[in-house]
Length: 158
Image 1 (cartoon, helix red, strand yellow):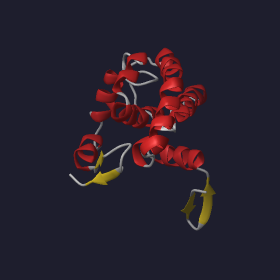
Image 2 (cartoon, one colour; image 1 turned 90 degrees about the vertical axis):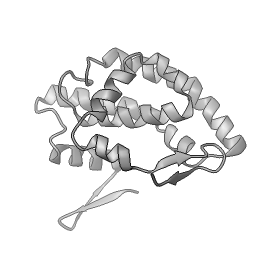
Image 3 (cartoon, rainbow, N blue to C red; image 1 turned 90 degrees about the horizontal axis):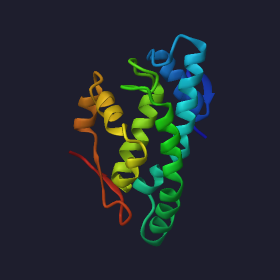
Image 4 (cartoon, rainbow, N blue to C red; image 1 turned 45 degrees about the vertical axis):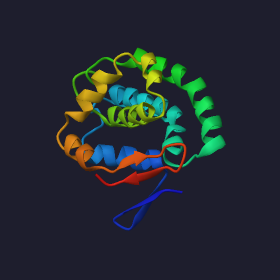
């Protein structure tokens, strides 16, 4: 169970921790309805969670089996996300935490099966907008590279 200690007080659950950190970073819309839309996009993106163990953990037959299941469900999720996308970010001109969440999964999908992104035609626009955010390009330039996906996955320093 993920737990974040804030001034000695525990905050449990990854979604709660995410929204708390997003509010501190001013990545949550001020308008309550817009904030709910942001939550909706982030929750929809979480339907792509299988991408994480596909890139980071599964190997051999298990990888092949799980990848097939992911590839079967991913298009529906991406089509639904695409319907909500306004551009350049999900809710328009301002970036919010939902954009970072979707970016994370899209970047993993590019490693697993890039052809799946055809179901979200503007994925490249969103990804470029996120990558242009202050600090993001520096992070991406220095983060370790996932290699040997499906065989012996690991991260290699750049």
